Length: 238
Image 1 (tube, rainbow, N blue to C red):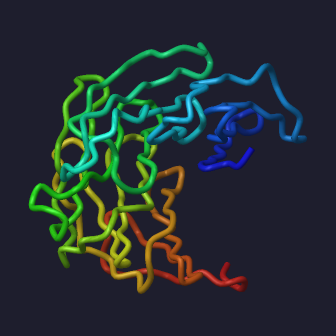
Image 2: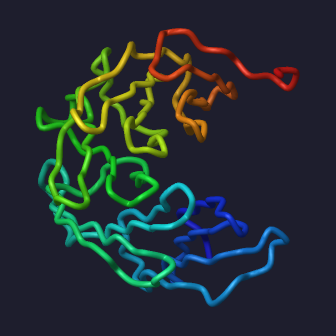
């Protein structure tokens, strides 16, 4: 089967993989450090109609957004539903009704499954900036975060949460990286111009640095909170 979405996260005993490969469906599998399967696979959905599927850092939780009925001819995205899975318990432990389904890249979960970040179409129409939405999974509420400084109309990408859920970072197709305070929703520090479309980002375990990868092949590291200064990594960087 062709994998339309895949993700791997390290856990204390090895790693966890998630694959969305119709017609097999969305499947989570644990693996040992030696690459051997641990336990039976967990099938989150056998349906090919899945809008998004993703793992939390550390592989404790998985999120899935089933595709809603078609809304052809209307602007924006129809309402959606987030299903939160506890992978150790192999069951759904929470659902959240979303105002809209994610419009771009796969959303991201915080490590403890309490928060999700996603992008949705602009309320101003197809030429407006894509909105960045933070979802509190426990209270089932949403907050729209400030748009990027340059009003980029392309999708957000490269989402990452600090391990303590204090900050969330998000990049854009236009090559800008922003960071937000999760509790208040306020932007923290300056917007970073990375020079190329953001592909991925990840906070260090202590939350003091953020590594940012761009599609132009560069990886840069910024202190947290952002100061505007970054260090480019090369094969010779120590």
